[in-house]
Image (cartoon, rainbow, N blue to C red; front, side, top):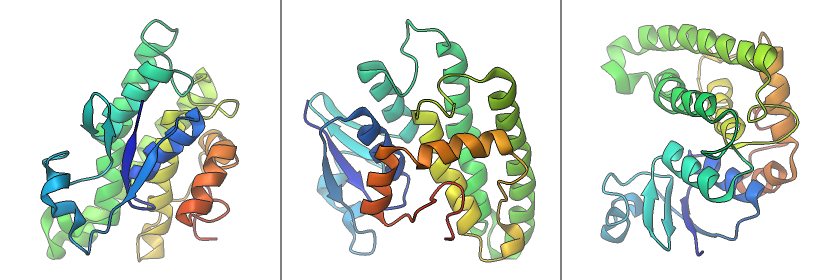
Length: 222
């Protein structure tokens, strides 16, 4: 199986790179330059009509959307999440799509509030996004603390933990107003999961390659 990951460091494609490294799957990185127009190149648009990353070329055809790629990797290789015939699959799917469809847009509204309703409403959008993210993090913290799923734990790095690590990294790092930055401190169970993920061999390799720093998921401003 030949895989090519279209990638920008510290973009959402980093989630897929982390999963591939964790799986030990051979892949090639095609570095993309947004400012150079790579996202609008006809050859790339033929793979992803929306001109976005992550995009992965496989022997069976191209794929895009982070959750879809992660689920495909889980079904093909296992280990980073439960396969269809393994325990916990139904709950894993619920939380994977929660992160993709609910938490991910919340983070984007926090770090790019102007995209939601223009510059005039950006401050209000950002405040609402931070409050929403705090509630969502509380639910995740409860999940880890009370249910301790194997696919989101300190014991075995997985696709969902890596996805959360990149998203919450942005929420802690990117808002220009430090008052609007997400604080991981009130969620110790979730923080423990992210700390274990950032210390994995796969994450250390990606952090070095993409210049993410020594604690990319728990203290990204270091």
